[in-house]
Image (cartoon, rainbow, N blue to C red; front, side, top):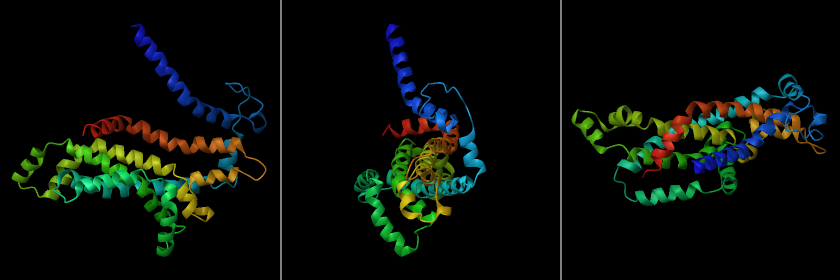
Length: 271
């Protein structure tokens, strides 16, 4: 019983440590600019919405940045599922020469940092006319997220009995019909997990957006935060308010899919 209480207190302490930066971000966004550094109390003595008014009511293109981030994140999510689902199925179910080396290659590619790929991708995209294009950023983000999607979905497919496909084949289903009608519904937790992670990772991506997007009206919400960093100082209140607002889609998606994410990751860890 005592050990249980100690573990509970330890878990609560870890949660507090992880959540405190988020709490401080929200508190800072609600303080007057003059009080951000002078008021160090955990609970602010004065609360104002002036930072949010700066973002939402002045000439700051908040909605444009949010729209661009949504287009990129949804594009990455759809692209990953369209390419990752059949690719992972082939690696899990079909006898492909060199499949093991393909899996090792995908695992290695997943470890590549984005700063290593940015320059080669910039050279390729400049020749293809994809610089200053949201589609170019979608393709670049997929180089980071697609390997993760393939690896997670492959392990999800491996957990499905082969007998189901054999039974479908006996009933007259083609391989594609069995894949779309029987297999895909069974790996729905894995698909939702991959969709959620693809959206979250591409939403917060910064380097590729900074490298490929030159025009202000094409910027994402992460690039838009740079406008509050000036040569002689940083508008911390507006930056924290923008951080809070830009976190809302991520929080909503995570809360809506948390049970599927837990199920998808645990099923992907079996094999």
